[in-house]
Amino acid sequence: MRLVIQRVSNAKVEVSNKIIGQIEKGFLVLLGVGPEDTENIADYLVEKLCNLRVFEDENHKMNLSVKDIDGELLIVSQFTLYADCKKGNRPSFTNAAEPEKANELYKYFIEKCKNKVKRVEHGEFGADMKVSLLNDGPVTIILEK
Image (cartoon, rainbow, N blue to C red):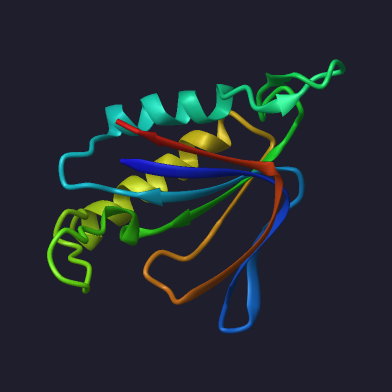
Protein backbone atom coordinates (compact mmCIF):
# COMPACT_ATOMS: atom_id res chain seq x y z
CA MET A 1 0.00 0.00 0.00
CA ARG A 2 1.35 3.39 -0.96
CA LEU A 3 0.23 6.76 0.32
CA VAL A 4 1.17 10.17 -1.01
CA ILE A 5 0.18 12.58 1.74
CA GLN A 6 -0.06 16.31 1.19
CA ARG A 7 -0.63 18.74 4.02
CA VAL A 8 -3.32 21.07 2.70
CA SER A 9 -5.17 24.24 3.61
CA ASN A 10 -8.06 22.87 1.53
CA ALA A 11 -8.74 20.21 -1.07
CA LYS A 12 -11.61 18.84 -3.10
CA VAL A 13 -12.39 16.04 -5.53
CA GLU A 14 -14.93 16.30 -8.35
CA VAL A 15 -16.64 13.72 -10.56
CA SER A 16 -18.61 14.93 -13.59
CA ASN A 17 -18.22 18.57 -12.45
CA LYS A 18 -19.79 17.79 -9.05
CA ILE A 19 -17.84 18.08 -5.79
CA ILE A 20 -18.06 14.71 -4.03
CA GLY A 21 -15.49 15.35 -1.30
CA GLN A 22 -14.07 18.52 0.19
CA ILE A 23 -11.97 19.37 3.25
CA GLU A 24 -10.30 22.31 4.91
CA LYS A 25 -7.03 21.98 6.89
CA GLY A 26 -5.68 18.45 6.95
CA PHE A 27 -4.33 15.84 4.54
CA LEU A 28 -5.08 14.97 0.95
CA VAL A 29 -4.16 11.28 0.73
CA LEU A 30 -3.60 9.56 -2.62
CA LEU A 31 -3.85 5.82 -1.91
CA GLY A 32 -2.62 2.96 -4.06
CA VAL A 33 -3.14 -0.73 -3.27
CA GLY A 34 -0.75 -3.51 -4.24
CA PRO A 35 -1.58 -7.20 -4.73
CA GLU A 36 0.07 -8.27 -1.45
CA ASP A 37 -1.68 -5.67 0.71
CA THR A 38 -3.87 -6.73 3.63
CA GLU A 39 -6.09 -5.19 6.30
CA ASN A 40 -3.13 -5.43 8.72
CA ILE A 41 -1.05 -3.27 6.40
CA ALA A 42 -3.95 -0.82 6.08
CA ASP A 43 -4.27 -0.68 9.89
CA TYR A 44 -0.56 0.10 10.24
CA LEU A 45 -0.73 2.90 7.67
CA VAL A 46 -3.90 4.40 9.17
CA GLU A 47 -2.04 4.69 12.49
CA LYS A 48 1.02 6.23 10.82
CA LEU A 49 -1.12 8.67 8.83
CA CYS A 50 -3.26 9.85 11.72
CA ASN A 51 -0.27 10.25 14.07
CA LEU A 52 2.16 11.78 11.56
CA ARG A 53 3.43 14.97 13.21
CA VAL A 54 3.79 17.50 10.39
CA PHE A 55 1.53 20.33 11.56
CA GLU A 56 3.13 23.27 13.33
CA ASP A 57 2.82 23.83 17.06
CA GLU A 58 2.92 27.21 18.83
CA ASN A 59 6.72 27.31 18.31
CA HIS A 60 6.40 26.75 14.54
CA LYS A 61 7.84 23.23 14.81
CA MET A 62 6.25 20.33 12.93
CA ASN A 63 5.11 18.58 16.07
CA LEU A 64 1.33 18.04 15.79
CA SER A 65 -0.71 15.33 14.07
CA VAL A 66 -3.90 15.70 12.06
CA LYS A 67 -5.72 14.40 15.15
CA ASP A 68 -4.08 17.04 17.37
CA ILE A 69 -5.32 19.90 15.19
CA ASP A 70 -8.80 18.42 14.57
CA GLY A 71 -7.82 18.23 10.91
CA GLU A 72 -9.64 16.50 8.09
CA LEU A 73 -8.77 13.82 5.54
CA LEU A 74 -9.61 13.58 1.85
CA ILE A 75 -8.72 10.09 0.60
CA VAL A 76 -8.52 9.43 -3.15
CA SER A 77 -7.77 6.06 -4.74
CA GLN A 78 -4.92 6.17 -7.25
CA PHE A 79 -3.71 2.92 -8.80
CA THR A 80 -1.12 4.86 -10.82
CA LEU A 81 1.04 5.00 -7.68
CA TYR A 82 2.05 1.48 -8.72
CA ALA A 83 3.19 2.50 -12.21
CA ASP A 84 6.27 0.72 -13.51
CA CYS A 85 8.14 2.94 -15.96
CA LYS A 86 11.33 0.87 -16.31
CA LYS A 87 10.63 -0.31 -19.86
CA GLY A 88 9.66 2.08 -22.64
CA ASN A 89 7.64 5.21 -22.18
CA ARG A 90 4.23 3.74 -21.43
CA PRO A 91 3.77 2.84 -17.75
CA SER A 92 2.69 -0.64 -16.79
CA PHE A 93 0.20 -0.99 -13.96
CA THR A 94 0.53 -4.73 -13.39
CA ASN A 95 1.99 -4.04 -9.93
CA ALA A 96 -1.34 -2.61 -8.74
CA ALA A 97 -3.93 -4.82 -7.04
CA GLU A 98 -6.93 -6.07 -9.00
CA PRO A 99 -9.80 -3.54 -8.82
CA GLU A 100 -12.06 -5.65 -6.56
CA LYS A 101 -9.36 -6.13 -3.92
CA ALA A 102 -8.16 -2.53 -4.22
CA ASN A 103 -11.69 -1.17 -3.73
CA GLU A 104 -12.24 -3.37 -0.66
CA LEU A 105 -9.02 -2.15 0.98
CA TYR A 106 -9.74 1.44 -0.05
CA LYS A 107 -13.14 1.30 1.69
CA TYR A 108 -11.59 -0.44 4.70
CA PHE A 109 -8.91 2.26 4.96
CA ILE A 110 -11.54 5.02 4.85
CA GLU A 111 -13.64 3.38 7.57
CA LYS A 112 -10.61 2.95 9.84
CA CYS A 113 -9.69 6.62 9.37
CA LYS A 114 -13.22 7.64 10.37
CA ASN A 115 -12.50 6.16 13.81
CA LYS A 116 -9.42 8.38 14.19
CA VAL A 117 -10.23 11.88 12.90
CA LYS A 118 -13.27 14.14 13.03
CA ARG A 119 -13.99 14.26 9.28
CA VAL A 120 -13.07 11.97 6.40
CA GLU A 121 -14.11 12.65 2.82
CA HIS A 122 -13.19 10.54 -0.20
CA GLY A 123 -13.23 10.18 -3.94
CA GLU A 124 -15.07 7.59 -6.04
CA PHE A 125 -13.13 4.42 -6.75
CA GLY A 126 -12.50 3.92 -10.47
CA ALA A 127 -14.01 7.24 -11.52
CA ASP A 128 -12.38 9.96 -13.59
CA MET A 129 -11.74 12.46 -10.81
CA LYS A 130 -10.49 16.03 -10.75
CA VAL A 131 -8.53 16.78 -7.58
CA SER A 132 -7.74 20.33 -6.47
CA LEU A 133 -5.66 21.31 -3.47
CA LEU A 134 -3.75 24.09 -1.81
CA ASN A 135 -0.61 22.40 -0.49
CA ASP A 136 0.47 23.99 2.80
CA GLY A 137 4.23 24.25 3.14
CA PRO A 138 4.57 22.56 0.75
CA VAL A 139 4.62 19.34 2.75
CA THR A 140 4.40 16.04 0.88
CA ILE A 141 5.18 12.69 2.52
CA ILE A 142 5.27 9.22 0.98
CA LEU A 143 4.38 6.25 3.18
CA GLU A 144 4.34 2.61 2.19
CA LYS A 145 4.47 -0.79 3.78
